Length: 190
Image (cartoon, rainbow, N blue to C red; front, side, top):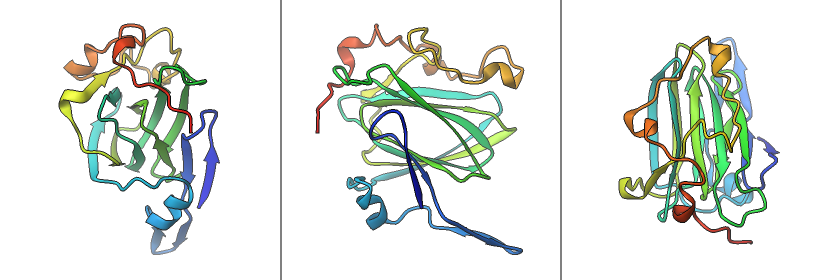
């Protein structure tokens, strides 16, 4: 597999080796030793799968204090995936990484604990799969506004030819980074 370090340490793009022929393809989507060699040593405790329609934006979500790290990929379709560093005191606080994930490139993105995460569906629909290193805790979940002007994220919404993305009621009630300051995790240098 090929690992690409992003502009934010710990956020990794992982390109698995794909073996294909006229019958189709095979890839190893996870193997604990290889991922441990990358420093991803926490065991994954929960797998999630969502299907979303074109123009759906899910996020930006994070859990605090019971944080989750996520290994995400697209099984079918295409998304623009975003990870935002929300760790107070981090040298990259408020910065983000944007990666296009789709069924052709088969890329994965590792989103560490202390990051808000979200994605916008760019295809007719998308099946989005993610492994989490902590269990989902609804009482710990926080929502950062996808359109917080302080973040300046280019979701590519205009490219889809839609006015506004489709949001859940919870995501519509998201907060800005400034409004969440007292609830954000603290950066812990390695």
